[in-house]
Image (cartoon, rainbow, N blue to C red; front, top):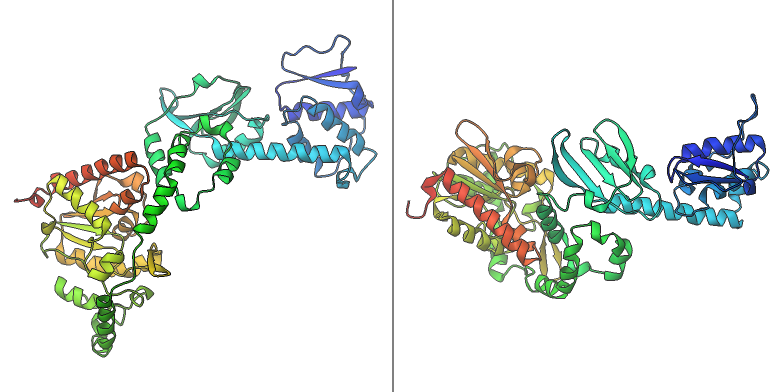
Length: 496
């Protein structure tokens, strides 16, 4: 009986070298065994001798090496001998891998599937937490407990995906470390060696709660894809039970607050707009949707021109253009994404549910809204009709770019000290490029010598949060941003 020592539980290279030698020596599968690390071999086990010089190397089908790599990652204690038995048989049964009914091939397929699934779960459920390391700087560490020996198999995925990070994945038997240039494997670790949380965890929990859709909840499907075995390593799972418990009430709230079709008054506005088409033809030279886009001289003139804008398809289903509102010498412009259902009907920005959150935050900060100019990046309501309801739809890049002409006119005519972008769409419209809220929020950004930009969330984001604690936290953060607005532009103060 021959014994082959292997360095670690998924030592594919060690197994492959030993398997080649054993085949060259004619060692049958029942005459070879494998031990891992410091494990002691059997009492009568002998080391595998070196093959004679010039011995022929075994050949295998192209698909076998990748299959064998997966097999040695399985938790089965017999995996190395089993993989060698397949290799042994392939020397005389060249088409063995094509015989799906063969017991060994059936077993290999099941083992390979289990390893692939375990590797997928590792990719999906590893959660990094950042610490400050004196030598490495920002160091991301994760704790994970795979069922099979999949660390070596899966770690290259994380090296590609997070190439710019320094990270370590700790597991009970084997750990992986990426220093930004090289992937290394380390001994196993214990759970207490991983950090318990980090300063980004609250933001992640807020995001997870905000994207939870109670109307699409399927508990069995969710637990099948996210087994409870992994929950202890994932901070968001603390939210799962309360989110599930409140799913029915949240669905009911969503249905009760859905927007409705415009009123008869709104329909009449659209009819008057249609009757104005002949007059629109006479003003082609001043409307960007109908001609050269001549710049207006006043906000009132811009509002009149925008009322006839057809530069993008959004004008047709919308009730009316919702232009900005406020004094022409306002020191601050607040820019939202687009009008909502109620704004489309009323013809004014921020008068719906999000507008109420906006007004409350301004009041808490001591800001007089009447001293500010409030507008949107896109001036028409984009929606999807569902029965009698109009569901908000996010404007696309081309619609934002077309409507930016109007925002530029508002900026040029008002010349504010500060522009406040409410949400990523507004920030994109102001800056002309895509930015993230996380990277730009609560920072004063110089646009030119006279104007600065402050990016924050859109009030509707707070409304969408299903968890009350998250709503309270984000409301305080939004109010803090409004306080920064007042600190930057004190003349906005109530009674100022």
